[in-house]
Image (cartoon, rainbow, N blue to C red; front, side, top):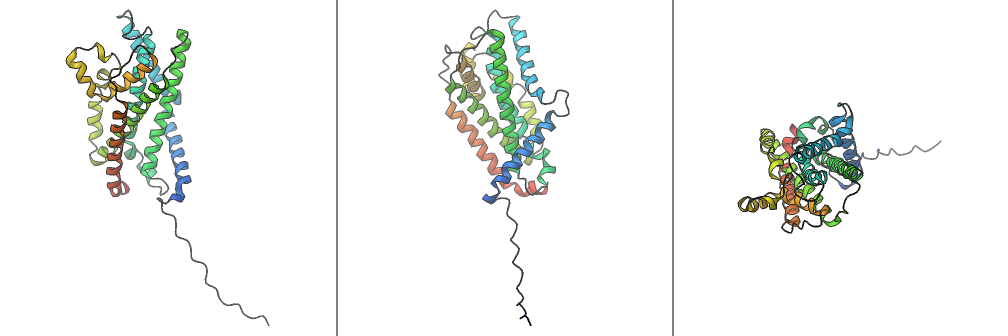
Length: 277
């Protein structure tokens, strides 16, 4: 007769992985990509033309500025192209503005998604920030190529200054956007306050003028506006005669990173409230 086998207890079930352990890096990348694709459809999917509006909006603004100011001015404040002058001022400003606008209400709008344990607030922030950078970079490249085709060419940009302008706009928008996300979490009225405060930014950020053209009291005051440094650096990249030696890219990038660190630390402290909302 066969000898009875001893009863062996079943192996213990392995506990589920915590959403914060390093083994989840691949899942985090897939989650961010999924949120980015969802945001692309949610932002423009219900509008005729879809994602094309991400390009149409800045093109329409630049064309309006060109038509308005070329009717009153014989030449732009810098160079010979009205389109290039306003494009190099408006495009980096738009990158900053879109980042802050997208990240401020980010977690409030993504509450249904945060119910899934595989998705963290940081994933949603990273997805929105990445989508804004990709969208605005593509829009800027297409717009500048269009200007080059229309006008028969553009001056070769300085890659160092162009990257500096992009880094300033991206870091400042990311830092202020994450900080705004924290403020919206603490006090939802901040979203309305920022909407009011940001309205005059286009007029005081060097998009429509050069800082050097202002009278002395305002000329020095403009140095405290980081967006003036960004637009001046972008213009200097395409206009070799414009030195703009007063810009401070390292200081602007560090200011953006400091706001980012403050915002992330604050959101980490509010993780209990985010989980309950």
